[in-house]
Length: 437
Image 1: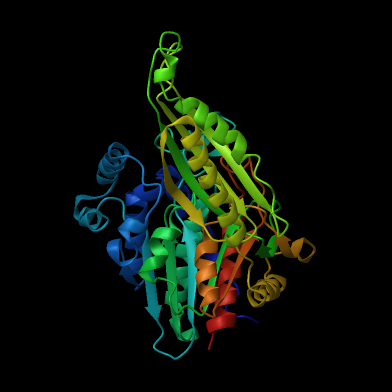
Image 2: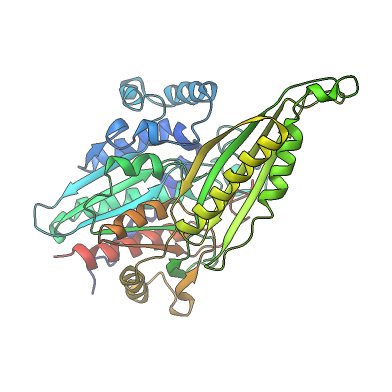
């Protein structure tokens, strides 16, 4: 019998309470001030050594930062939520250097096993309908415009419970454990700012995962997620010259036409024979008036590729198109990155590990075990995973089954909280397999 037996189940009520706590106070991207402080407080109580701020985030490597006004608003909200004696933590986070990395050393020789959990919410206003459980039971988001509509509140909860169990049973283990609580997963903008500080350097095993997505039944699991797509998120601005549309159109430079042509040409990029590629122009805004040659235009774009190389092919083609249409229409342009991550596949060794412990877990039904599945979407975890694998380590991404009240990023999103116990149990059993004495 595994030493993990029963440990996750004993924390069920604590898991539910913690999930609902974090659900009630969501924050997004580089503004996860209160969330970071709350996580750090618990990890310190569990005996972990903590790193915050510039130790784990390279400021200039960040993307998709948001406005100074939004930053100030998030910081003021965090100050109101935190006890005054914890405000000093906010100084360490400076202008949004949020997230926390925690480590514990067994003092016995062994591997460095790391876990990654994302902590940010999404820009969605949560439902206030009586049928929506968080609203009905009093743990709906305390703010409109932000909610945990993707399950990251559950991921935080699983990570903290796992850290607690490992610290309380440290005599069972060898090597070191590292917990990465990452901000900015939404928009794929967090890992690019954290990885350059070396937080996955020397990691032998990196484990991560998500509740829901393609694992849609409690008791189910997808052990190995493959074909996590690489992606680039970027904004394009065109600057032209205004002029009277009837009286002197020849004096203008039409940024709207440049953007419209760029959008059409981007969606016409030849697909690549080596694998899946994607392009989307999600936003196009331009112009100032009906009778004015448009002097400005803005585009929000993203590319994706089955591999990092395929994504680079798509993004480079987009930049070529922007440069070309700008020249044709006599306008200037700027391309600004707002996020991105590498692509990749789970290491086979980690997929096999997840499958083994899943068959042993009382919370997983054997007929609901899926050993491998192609994701076909992006996840910021892939940036860390790729770095670990390139350095010779092993890394894998799983999906924990749960019924959903509504899809991810929907205002009525909610999940079956039984999956929290399942997640802790699977990661804990994996820890015993990799770093157990």
